[in-house]
Image 1 (cartoon, rainbow, N blue to C red):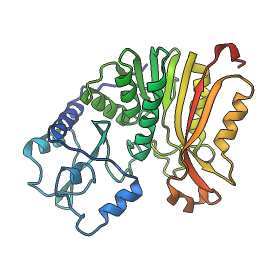
Image 2 (image 1 turned 30 degrees about the horizontal axis):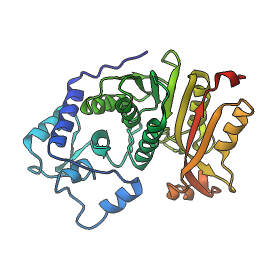
Image 3 (image 1 turned 135 degrees about the horizontal axis):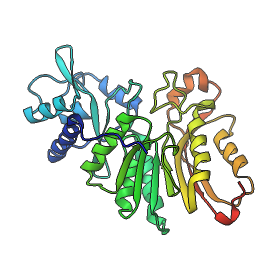
Image 4 (image 1 turned 90 degrees about the vertical axis):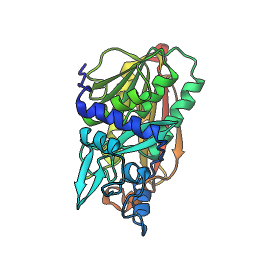
Length: 322
């Protein structure tokens, strides 16, 4: 299991920056990229006037706006960027369940950008609901594609006795997860580089995932789901979970699917795989229509809509036929 080094001066400075923002009562809910763009495009929003503008709305700011202590932390964290005689933050900070999370600034153009947005809020709400009603002992939990870490951190908070693995192939995401976990006071969480579960051993009582599910021409890690219409990674996580769940263990997968002619191709695929295995599973639409602007792109030209869905799959040992 590959454990990246998260004790670098830049990472520690990012943690200090988060601590400073929290001490100043910073609060920001991150909207969709389309909303973010529209709000920033309004007259008067060209330049930052406060902390929310700098670290939430990702607007440029002039010398003297921020306290020297914050500027120093940004500089040491390597997130202070000069632009046309002004400055910008390379990171955003979002509020979730009372905690602060570092992630990539808007717009998320870099190949290794770390995404955080409305899907994050829906995913963690789904996870909290599941854990509230789950009475099975959870010894090992894995978050596949942890991103900024909200899923893994939420699980670690609600199950402090469990070993929680936050996994991603993106080292930038892992570094931000480490910072966000420390800021939340979480210590039962291990951050490791892994492609799905290939680089970690053993079985898990709970596997959670909120993977990318779009077809992205730039194939950015946080956004590109691969396969047909973006479902490739979600299907790979489903297949992996069927092999790595402990007896009675559950996969909780939050993802998006493109609906064609009223048919859900992802649901059809998992139905075919499960067949008559006897495993306990449920499937529901969380939001019937998201990222509608994507329908104008060629890959979705024939799609009715893009929906957010939740799959719960529990391994029944007596029913395993694979």
